[in-house]
Length: 320
Ligand SMILES: [Fe+2]
Ligand SMILES: [Fe+2]
Image 1: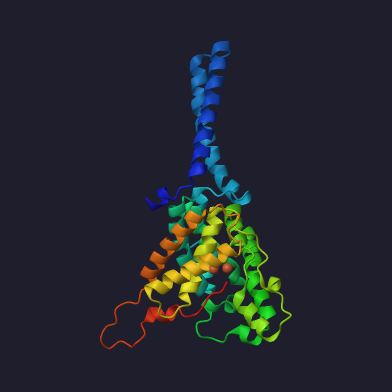
Image 2: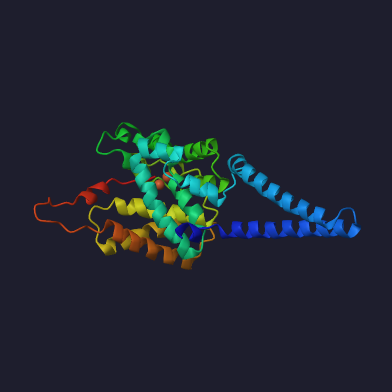
């Protein structure tokens, strides 16, 4: 039922329209042939039935080729990509488990947001699953994968760290192209940071050098061009910011979500996304509600240590 709700409605409309046009054309040809007397009526009828069956079979056989080589985002292809056993996603689970967890939570938020603003929920979810796939190239440079180990950024200059962080967008696009992911999913990967600032390393660099340019610490991507890409950007930022809080109260979660979304908005990142101010307000509310329920501290039972386990999981910030 969930998948039916998530159907790509414009695509369904296109398919239905194409079906009616095809049927109309076939009936037209049948009538012409029958009227012209070139063949008996039953020969025309038999030809139409066999032709439509053959067309359906050929269409089914050619669909995977169209999906893979022309990057067409059919619902079947998106559902295939949403399966955790898809090779690229499986790689992410094994080699960058922190990033995979972050992507799943981002997808959960973004998909719910898609229902709120009337975007394509299935495409949004799949785009969120793959948005950070470029981190596979250097998983250890992203905070969510450190697991208490040595932070390689400690030995790098902030400029170099920012370059490595920026690179995960281009690497993600390149990996997605290698796997023939649909162009709509590749666009989400390319646009999920827009031209936003890698603030942590910018501040670190600016502390010791007044001649640092903010522009050098900005991503080189495109602003989100669709609601789906805008949703992934906002869900990604909200999830990372809330996870970085240690033991947030409900009002802190909401103020963090609103602050992060407000920063993206005032930075012009959502100007081309077609999300309206009313949409963004409803998204902030929906994301806050979901994040509060996810990160709400659970009851502590007698004999347990002061801090609960799941609070520990979220203390590492993800800034990419
Ligand atoms: Fe992310
Ligand atoms: Fe990212």
